[in-house]
Amino acid sequence: MSEDRLLTALREHPGAFLSGEQLSRASGISRAAIWKQIEKLREEGYEIAAQPHLGYQFVAPPDRLIPEELSWGLKTAVVGRRISSYARTDSTMEIAHRLAAAGEPEGHAVFAEAQTRGRGRLGRTWRSPAGQGVYLSVLLRPKLAPADAPLLTVLAAVALVEAIREGAGLEARIKWPNDVLIGERKVSGILTELQSELGQVHAAVLGIGLNVNTPRSALPKFATSLALARGERCDRLAVARALLAALDRWYVELTRRGAGRLLTAWQAASMTLGRRVRVACQDRSVDGEAAGVGPAGALLVRTDTGRMETVTAGEVLILR
Ligand code: BT5
Image (cartoon, rainbow, N blue to C red; front, side):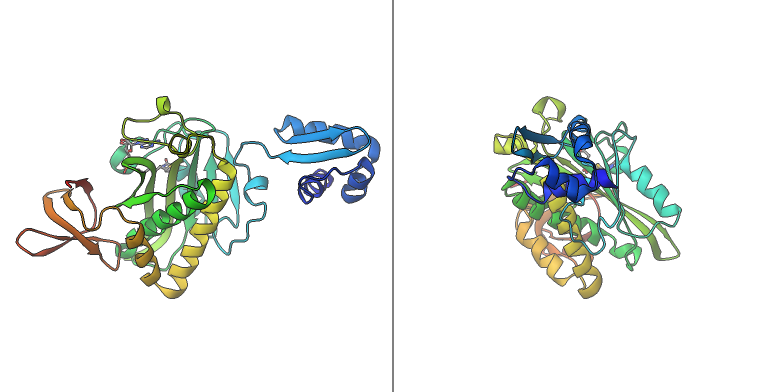
């Protein structure tokens, strides 16, 4: 569409003023109608400067996670091949599951500005205030056995650490199994859900909640956001794009070459390994030293008797 071409022409020359005539040539919109289209873009939240005799200049996109902006400059093989964005929904997990059931190919990324029923594990709630965070579910169809699916949580955690570094300049650490922390506070949580049958994964929905500009008042007690940790607002689009790119890099690595490098990266970013932990599992509790991570993303705990226990799911309390 010619409106899209107008936006592309402006975006391709950041910092430069383009005359009405240049924009008209690039977009196919008549010179007389350019101003009206610019006003329309401004109404959508685009910041565009105008100077008499000079023309128009692209200043900033809207602070919204919309497909046109998320895919700008994004070169991914799988993750984000398709992007959907919702202003408000119950949970992006629900939308991605419905897409999966309808046969949608893998890679579709579903974003929402706000969730009314954002969820964590075991029926817990994920607080999802509007316009502050990244709430994302990615539909994947990995050739993994259900028992290896925790590797997707490992993948998301490593991708989050990289995206937080790249998009916000902050160092985050991974707390097994599905939390990403800055300092001692949770900044992001991961939820992996499967559609599987007879030992085969048909679809996996990888859910990620990341607090970007979320104020303290909207968060639970032991949580933080990138903006709180950095002391200034962060570019949500930049963080979200970096996240899609990192998820894609690691997904391609995992599916083509296996989990080796992924597990090494996880270990380097882990805050759990080497610590004394208490892991509460469904029916028991294991005390010991977090000694390593198994090939499918399980936690290896060396108990006081020297025995190695493998824990596939649970809550970790770091004792010291
Ligand atoms: C998680 O569960 O950490 C997984 C969260 C996944 C959320 C994403 S958002 C996009 C997608 N759509 C969804 O509906 N969900 C996914 P869990 O480990 O069970 O942790 C949940 C706990 O984290 C809660 O009980 C709170 O204590 C805490 N919590 C809730 N909201 C939080 C927030 N915004 N930031 C930090 N901690 C939070």
